[in-house]
Image (cartoon, rainbow, N blue to C red; front, side):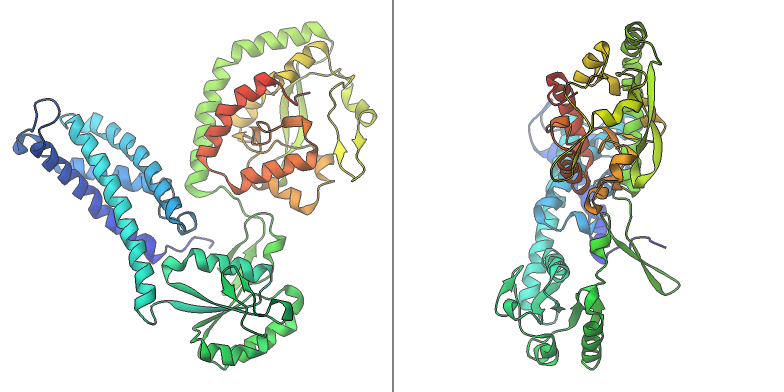
Length: 474
């Protein structure tokens, strides 16, 4: 239940890559024996022939790298530049994996030959994908019936989202004919590159005149009776019918459909980061978080001593926060306020005219002397490395929020909990606490919708500079 269906195109690409990678290795041998470059010039072909297990290492390295990079995931390679980027990233990972394998299994491969194999494999993989895209584009124009001609019933928000998907996946043989909609103001207009062809009642005539093969119904939930009428009309015609339920607006981030016992189920709260991405992010947190914890152990001990000397009370402060999918957990921080700070919270809260709550202030009287320094440079956050190692947080993600603030969230703001909450994130390097809470959420949602390991690395690299500037940290 809930497993992704493997697309035929993904299988085609995988099979092609299983041929192209060994071809690159064979060509690299030929080039090293033919071109008079490198140490010793052209080498004898017999001396540089590769044993069979080198080809196996190459296949395993490249296939795993391509899978991990998402190069076979249809949703990630809709556009040519997305596919080219993921294949290029995969090539870097593949070369590292292959170098590691050869170090243990076969060290006689020429370095120049190794470089040839990498460059040739990248060129062949990108070239094949470019030719395949061109073939699909030409085939769609020259082979009648090759494309599925799709008519969307409903030109609202849901219908337009479907149109975008069809246009993005035109490589797969999908062709958008247009829309039907009962809104007369939309008639004769073009939405997402496709025309609104008439009313919903015009369905039979449009299907016949436009040679439509599939009807995708995208009517709002309030138009249930109208949806039944459209389905009744379409059932009498030689077309395939698909319905897009208008529940996705209620989804926190990604809505996913699955079938259980013949009954369709739509998940409205599904993890954004899953599968191999989830494993990689967790391993990254454990390795980098553990290393940072060891490096920071002595500074943390010194900070603990300073806090103890500065004011009475515990060194660590554990506060309940809201984590991924709304789960509550205790977040560790160095204590930067007086011991009774929680009971004084109501005295410093400010509510803006539009109802937004500001709970951080530049001159909060509860902050201690050492606490002011720790907050300015975000050193009070160091104990959260323990939360990372325990799996309650990630190094990078939206900041965990206090439950009473989350209770005030609008529904759209709750989407920030669709990923693991983090020590640092996109809004920390783009303004930090000098932005109101609701603007912080917009930055967090940018991270949610654009998550990648490379974005995590970028945020981590920019965090020290943001912390040193101390802008908005109080």
